Length: 371
Ligand SMILES: Cc1cc2nc3c(=O)[nH]c(=O)nc-3n(C[C@H](O)[C@H](O)[C@H](O)COP(=O)(O)OP(=O)(O)OC[C@H]3O[C@@H](n4cnc5c(N)ncnc54)[C@H](O)[C@@H]3O)c2cc1C
Image (cartoon, rainbow, N blue to C red; front, top):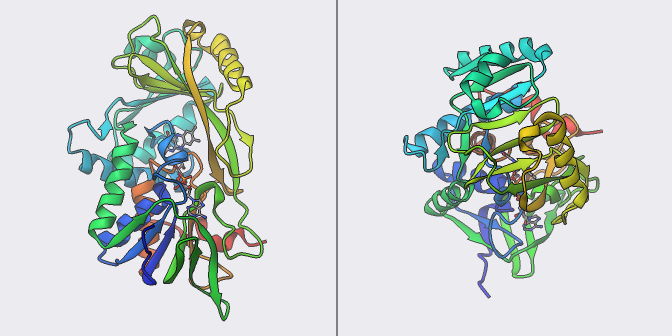
């Protein structure tokens, strides 16, 4: 059994996108050393290794959009135009005609950031993307800068860079509780021994917000399913990821088939959720009603995992309001991969005691969640 160091600067709980990107950003800022402790035998075992991999910036919510746009810039630099890390599929968000003005607002915000977005009428979208011709929608928001990420490569990148900056990653190591002395968090207790730390960073995904707190943070995990289909009648090459906003489903190419989600949202306790046949039925119903061309798709496999939200659906990034020495990076909902670079950067900036000029901290600080 590997022996843990008795003391370090930062202990990060969880090796998903929250923990890995925070450690990466701390390492980049020269703020190591630290220790990332992951309960599972591998990193990315939960939502971070099992999500839809969409890098989507056409978001209505300003906080999520700001984080996503900032992260997309980093992803593009990292990809270097090869398309290996960030497959430039483009993204197409489809909704009823009533959404046209909201789409215009998002397009304007993205244009101000130098991103390539356009609002299209349904007719123009159908001509431009013949594969969505059979879908039921009234307006479309196209963003050429959106794409599909190699999530395992990205998570590995964060962890490698963190290691290079003095972080150690220890899997198979659950943090059982926090050590608290004089009201201050001073480290963690694990089955492999105790570790003292200047700061403990709770990046435990669906399990976050419980360690060291008499009252857990109000984080709610919701189960969502993903399915992979057999090849549809039309070839999927060149298909953008396509999000049906009102109907609530999305799909993107996956090999010669599609990866699809019925955007189901069932409250769950923190766990590795099992699949529910009702989700496949929901997907079939939505396809039959809004995408008849895809209604007969054979589903090859499916899985479920958890998206964990705060009540306002913004992330939690900042020091605990009750426990000095404890810092939170959680509540990354359905956007934790595509915002990860900016989430890590924001966390590291705050951990370094600085105030970023690009985010309203009141929107993400844990103090807003106090009862
Ligand atoms: C179906 C679905 C589709 C999604 N699609 C997208 C998408 O297209 N784009 C996007 O950006 N996001 C997407 N997401 C969201 C994204 O996957 C999450 O926001 C992100 O992975 C959350 O990362 P995390 O590090 O907070 O949590 P996790 O990935 O769950 O990582 C937390 C880690 O902490 C560990 N842990 C917990 N407790 C302890 C402990 N006590 N000791 C040690 N380790 C512990 C866990 O084992 C886990 O590995 C999707 C999510 C779902 C469910």
